[in-house]
Length: 90
Image 1 (cartoon, rainbow, N blue to C red):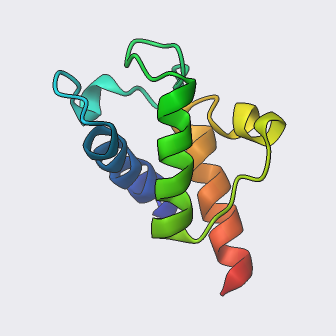
Image 2: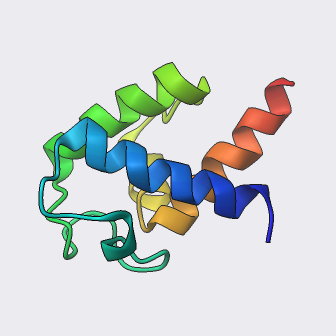
């Protein structure tokens, strides 16, 4: 277990808070399930909000739609991307 798992847990909380997902708990967001269009009901407009939150909170930019599609594949891919790109800055 390591920092990526901690980041994933933190991201679950932030996603729920940022998007105001009333009926979703962190346990509902499975690490490898599709993040967009999955059980959480997250859509492309929500992704824009999440991109802004990630940039503000983590200083990590998601520059284009193609990259976004890869990064937002699951909460694990999102956490891994943020972890790897945060590290380059410090």
